[in-house]
Amino acid sequence: MTITQIIAQIIGIFAMAFNIVSYQGKKQGTVIALQLVGGCLFAVNFLLLGAWVGGILNIIAVIRAVLFLLKKQLKTEKLPWFILFLCSYISVYVLNFTVFGVEPTPFNFVIESLPVIGMTALNIGFRLKNASDVRKCGLGRSPAWLIYNIAAGSWGAILCESFTLISIGIGMVRHDTKNSCNNENSML
Image 1 (cartoon, rainbow, N blue to C red):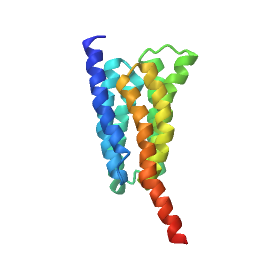
Image 2 (spheres, helix red, strand yellow):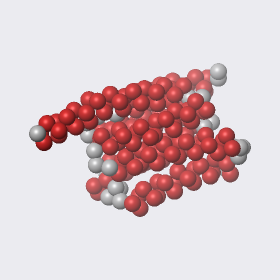
Image 3 (tube, rainbow, N blue to C red):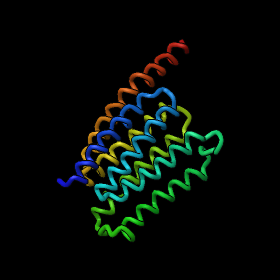
Image 4 (spheres, one colour):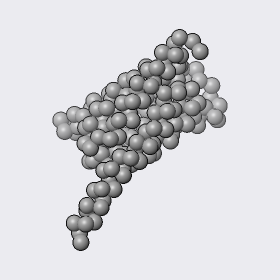
């Protein structure tokens, strides 16, 4: 393993910590802010590993997180923003095969599409109103990224998505199940 790969893996571990903790936030803004920091670190992690789609999509994720933190002022929950981000994800996917020189094999077409699927799921969550919905969309995001991370060889990202899935489950039990029980009790 080269020094660059070691540095990339260390940065990935720090990114992992921010992303895992993010799903414990009660407010959507807290979840997004913590993921913003994790996204910055993962962008560096993936770029150092030469995983261009993962790196660039994390840069877009940072921009997206900032914009969604300002969603009242910018009205980022509106459909044009969603379409803009979706187009940017697809553009990165296409650039991967045209500019970054990734071989266009059936395996690569599938693997490189997984982060696009993951980013789209989380983008849907950011458009929704509460942290519970963000956690639910995380269940669509994490498995897609987990498979990509294995292919990219990012151990911090692999651990992150594994722990994130557990963290989402804990967050759902702590916040969503409790709220569901409280709503059912108030109806009785």
